Image (cartoon, rainbow, N blue to C red; front, side, top):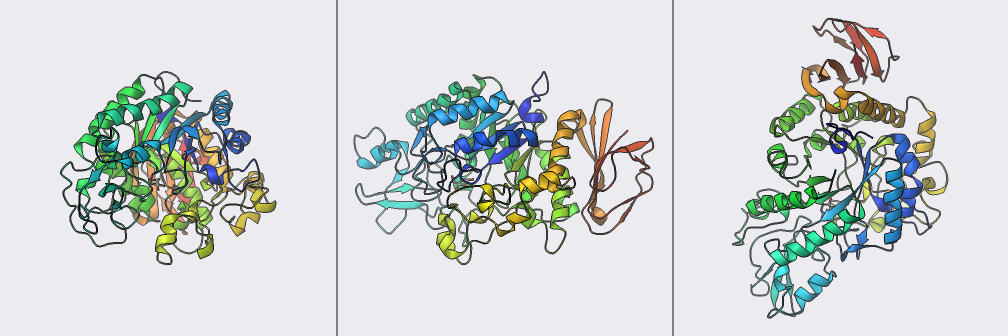
Length: 535
Ligand code: NOJ
């Protein structure tokens, strides 16, 4: 565990993202749960990560699979009990693994007692203003704001004859963060978990929590998703102010991390993502920028994304590196068309684990899990149900973890809530562990190197080859230690001629043996080779 002196765990460690419904089912109901995560802690420790971030496990009617919370202080029975969660905390901590929860501040579930009360009457209702209610004749919406999941963001409530705002599903009413009473109550809920000992939070859609006070229209946009041109519903100055308040709250506890999910389009807007880091000490500790996710397979594009991301990080700030999550296609499916996906997954692993910034690994990425094909009748994601067949939703990247060759890939004794990917017979943790060249073993080795070598977890990043001709090379330097990383994004041999003298030897390569001397001025980089060199 990297956590001494200037090596702060969340800066210099590796974080593993668990989608709990799909990780491991301990009780045979077909759904992953907290005791299941506890049972797999040895696996997580073996992988070598420093922390787990768990998608929401709070009480929820599961309209959006936990991202609709009806009680922020309770664990949903699907996942277990509060006792189970406490056990997870202590079991993880005893293995040196931190636990990060998901925190959804933009909205609650429509079944949260606050919303039930808010909805109950218009007048003399202390909670009315905890959500965003607005007048408009039925059928005429208060303005043109759209839900990120399709359709209008306003829902008419027949009881009190006003509209309420929902940036996501209508079962996810938006909280009014301008209301100080609500803010206080919400911050108390956050503190409930801090007092229990959680190590941080990933803040869901944090750049959307405050909207234009005058409810002005967003510019017209006719598209599938209404992410674009949404100045009135994103990145409002008050959002930044609330983030700073949040940081003050978190600062009362030691060693806490806050990670902001910054939803923007075009996907990945490094300037905006970085803006939530504030001056590097007063806002979020880390923010996600999704540029790398949308680079597809092109070394030059990766280079540009990385350069732009770093350019915007404040001097005292720190970047995160993320290539997959539960809302998007799995990374391996995005690595261009055609063959060599597994080779590419190894190059991508090397990229993610050698760039400057905290890497986030999405469960299954470490064995190169693919998107699953989900039939119409199997769709669980409300977005997929709504837009089928044009968009089949997010289930494809949320299918059960592939543990072994047994029934249901060893995920459950029961009937899995989403189908297991049929490739699990060849593609699973158990068989990859046995294969020294597997994606799993590449991850495991690189995570170990990331931990052991200061240049890799703390060093400065400097480009050497900027992706032309399909090769990306850069150095990571910490004091007098330097590591050079060279990645071949193509299926061809590359003649590399880098004018750096001194003797180099292989620290890691997907193709060459460790310790092999190498002359940077002239050598052949093999197809899809990822190589790390030390002096
Ligand atoms: C972003 C989350 O990642 C996604 O899964 C969820 O549907 C929305 N925010 C709403 O909470």
